[in-house]
Amino acid sequence: MPAEIGAAYGRLGKAMMSHDADGVKAVWAEDFVVNSPNNEVLTRDQVIAVMENDFLDYKDFHKHITFVGEKPEITVIMGYDTMVPMKGPGAGEQVTRPFTDVWAKRGGTWLLIARQATIAVAN
Image 1 (tube, rainbow, N blue to C red):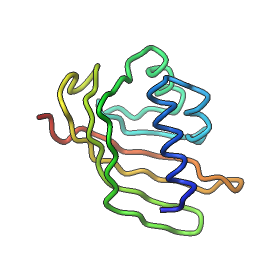
Image 2 (cartoon, one colour; image 1 turned 135 degrees about the vertical axis):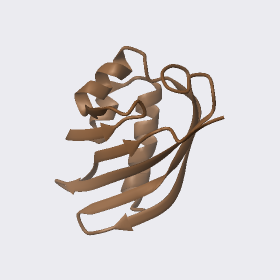
Image 3 (spheres, rainbow, N blue to C red; image 1 turned 180 degrees about the horizontal axis):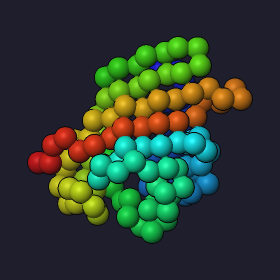
Image 4 (cartoon, one colour; image 1 turned 180 degrees about the vertical axis):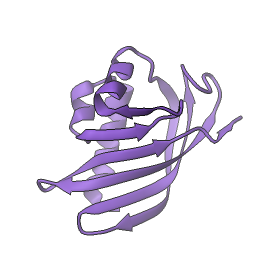
């Protein structure tokens, strides 16, 4: 995985955990979309609104990368996250959430443009 994307994941994780909308916007493209854990397709602004309303709250969050497909302008990263969501689907339980992230290099910066993340297992 490009080192820039690894660093962006780190910044994104910190921004999400601290509910920092500007930090999220620095990593997600303006046209970012996600097929979210509650099976809704949401835009960047919709996810940020959910985050700012304190609905995205996790503990014990870990990212496990299983595939990196690099192209000159696009990188696809697949894997799964394990975490305990405090609200929403699977609240209070450890969940495994497979994901596919699509990153695009825009203006010399890697930005997350699309994400699929749905809960596969609730233990």
